[in-house]
Image (tube, rainbow, N blue to C red; front, side, top):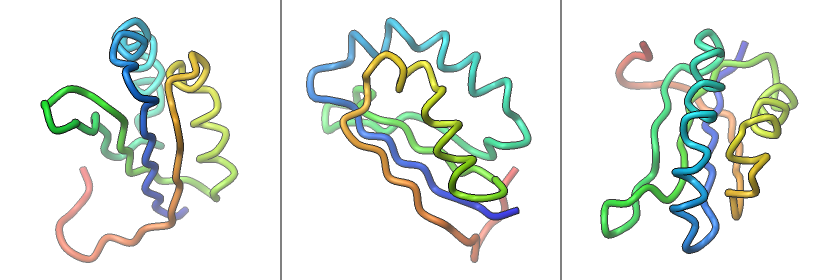
Length: 95
């Protein structure tokens, strides 16, 4: 297993789309507790949700890509861009 950071940036002016799909997104994420180690929204300069950040544990990047593709936010077309990077914890601990 490896750790990955998943950064999803919303399309501009898409807060209403995010809010309309938020309950389905949170339900989806909560159904993957062994996969999603830490997650939360990215905020814009006004403090509004503007993206998502995940730290996940997966077999490989393909598993992270599959998880992201099935996220209700992705299915709704919320994300402008998605970046997945391998990551290693050096300080602190994951829950």
